[in-house]
Image (cartoon, rainbow, N blue to C red; front, side):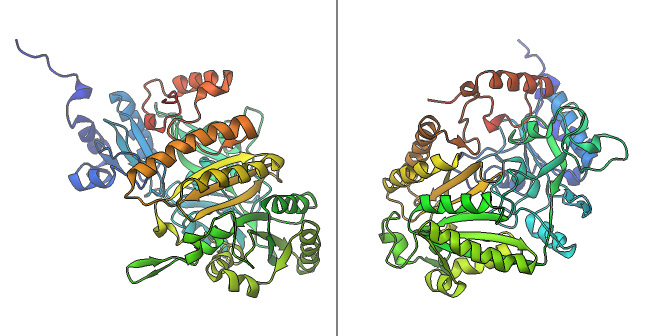
Length: 497
């Protein structure tokens, strides 16, 4: 019997050909080398070749791509600059990748209202340099300079230099699968800029934050920026207990002293002394041999960096306040000379972050495979999280154990990000640690009220959040009825047992 012809959308190559006809062959690649390059990232997620890779150069290209994908029901995943360790850039089976790196413009730097409008392919290196020329800075994350400001802020950032906000998003331009273009903030009105997130209608910007590309494709974003003031200071305070450092930053924040604070545990700040010598990484011996819960003599368990800016006169008085408050909680201020004697590498990085307003470039990833575990908790409860998590990580036997911790929204929440570096060749250990992380998230939520900072492999599940989950599923069906947007993100899947 003669076989029936395949439906049009199932014919091999027709989707790629259609996109090439619409966008041009320079914007759509399906050669073997390109497909192999875009099949994986540095995460443990198995590789998957895309049908093709699309390189849009403007919003109209995105509209055409999404309409075509929606018509042919071909799933996609979106990537900005590709600095990703969670598998979110790996395409779904039978899907394609939309690489936004050609959309890398800075559209506007508005120094009057304090926002910048940028495209998703822009990286922090170019962004921070352009802002500095205008006398401005942004909230930068603890990621490499090649990361995307848009992507970082959409996925709930680990931003430094801005205790006052949880995120920097003011306004978004979004394209839905059917080609609808919308703006979430004040720019939705004719001849109005992006100075307001909230207006006479409900706030939709938050809907697209932490959605991992499942509800729409962001083509530009207005992000908060801050003036570079007359003077700044970075005060370093050493503590022998994490809980004392939390009380220290809470006290300072409650008295309106810092722009931002970060707590660095000793194995993390000393890990910046890791260096490449020849073709091997040289690692300080105490990072491999000493229990991370017991620093060597003379090495503070944690160092808090307190960033302050303003007029010179206020900086001098604020430094005296920091010394007073540190002593109040059994800590002491460190001079830069003292800090250099303990960990010279990180002092150089802190200088880059706080004096030049640029992202840090961590050099410790050569130690092993980077596996982070991240939660947000209330200040009082995060103290217990640190003690418990350090005990759990000690069981992995994968020194060093590093963490940093920082406040958001004037200290209403404290982020705790801990990580280790197992041998990437030991796949069994890597799987064991990843599996243990899921158990730890469950314990953190139930015992300490900790909230996972980002979705990982379908965890946490929408089943955990009651009516919120049902409402979000209805939004997903309304925005993306064919389910083409980032199905591999795992937002709408049940947790696998």
